[in-house]
Amino acid sequence: MKITMIGTGYVGLVSGACFADFGHDVVCVDKVAEKIQAIESGRMPIFEPGLDQLVANNASAGRLTFTTDLAAGVKGADAIFIAVGTPSRRGDGHADLSYVYAAAREIAESLDGPTVIVTKSTVPVGTGDEVERIVKEVRPDLDIQVVSNPEFLREGAAIGDFKRPDRVVVGTTGNERAIAVMAQVYRPLNLNQAPVMFTGRRTAELIKYAANAFLATKITFINEMADLCEAVGAEVQEVSRGIGLDNRIGSKFLHAGPGYGGSCFPKDTLALVKTGQDYDTPIRIVETVVQVNDLRKRAMGRKIVKALNGDARGKKVALLGLTFKPNTDDMRDAPSLAIVQALEDAGAKIAAYDPEGMEVAAPMMPSVAMMGDAYEAAAGADALVLVTEWDIFRALDLKRLAGSMNTPLLIDLRNIYPRTEAEEAGFSLIRVGGQG
Ligand code: UGA
Image 1 (cartoon, rainbow, N blue to C red):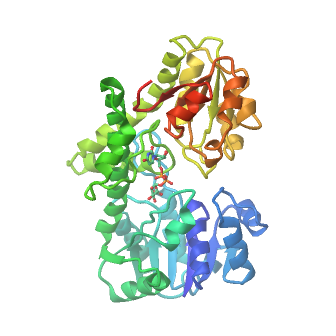
Image 2: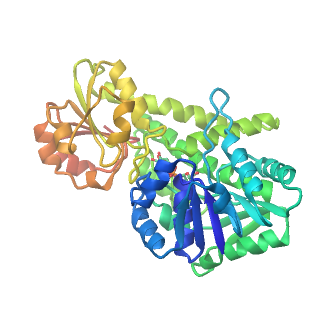
Image 3: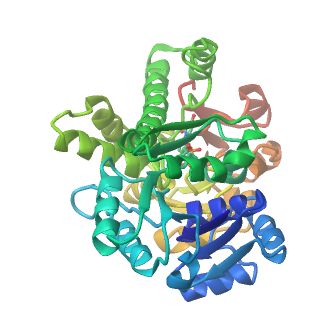
């Protein structure tokens, strides 16, 4: 199969490299020449474990090539994936589809034969219809099928998620050629026994939003339970385990924390809310999830101030982890941003360490001192706050940390440190949804 991937962002680059690894012939197209040059010389635009190696292997095998020339890249392709960005539109929260539509138009203009155009970007219900309208208007002479194939990759685990997905969702209008091409594209996954689910195009588009909104709801539910646990004297981790063992609920995405962030949940929940409102079927649960999560991030800053006896003025707070989750350098909608803001408003001085995120974070929080490691960040601090649960923070020498601080106060916003261990090291420990 010859596959063309338009956009070398997170989804495009990971999907392109994985398709090539399955043996397909893949061309990745991006408008930004520097980005293409960087990838070709082995520098990935994002931090994703294993991606550089995967790209290098498949590029040197000749299965994965890169170009800025869209017209050349799409010629002869069996399937052309649109994986460009769909940021939240400023002002109204709707997904901005201008990049998707521009890509569709440009693809259609450049085609020299029939093909299947696949939207992989997360797009609101009905986008496939509009893409189809555009390509038919531009090329009434060609049989171009438009398919929806949302992705369910998690940052930091993207390659594994692509190769061993729980499911693949393909939405078509029922056209046999489109179905056959998509079955062929995902044939290598049959070996991993992943179900490929064929459905209607609008349904596929909605599945993506429903999945992310449900996961965001699960997280927000347990976060509110965490608050209740603190109030009534219960332990949220045990509540999570106690409900998660029920197969109907499931144990995943029940870790209480500082609120969800990243490039997907905040944007997609908001877009689903807007779609619901547009169609006069408001999704009130998700509306509430969005509000609760926004408030929670800043509330974490207040939780830290409260732990400092309500007065953070002139005190030093050390943050461990800044990215929205581990194994990424992504700072989009990271809880750390709201936490830093709240702490600064309360007059605290902040030092931080993050294994991969400091370069991206520094310009977003200019007054925060970026340190060389966790120990440097903690030295002389009045509170140490675990914000993002990078593995490297699990095996820290807690005694050494506590000994170097002005006040040995540990605020664990991800509940990774066992209470006895932290207290034996000399810390007083505050967790999320637990006592103390
Ligand atoms: C999410 C989904 O998990 C993917 O399936 C989806 O494809 C992707 O969005 C997308 O739409 O592209 P991602 O944003 O990379 O993936 O990260 P997650 O691992 O889902 O974490 C999202 C946020 O939820 C993080 O801030 C994380 O800390 C938080 N979280 C997650 C919790 O607070 N508690 C949990 O139990 C799980």
